Length: 84
Image (cartoon, rainbow, N blue to C red; front, top):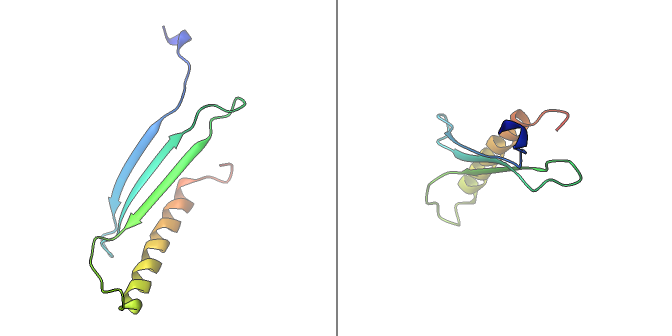
């Protein structure tokens, strides 16, 4: 039976929390349909922080956005290899 199985793709999801900032992240790795013998990879990084801030509190909003961007970039850099 194993000889007749053809790999079509995968779906992998992780969730994490940054203990220092309370920022949270959902990381999804999945594939699309084979294209020309290659398996396209999708990496979705959803960084968020559950809170309510006043829109006029731009200093706090900007700090939160920068903190989330840093977390997202850190995960991105540690997920892919040079070949990917």
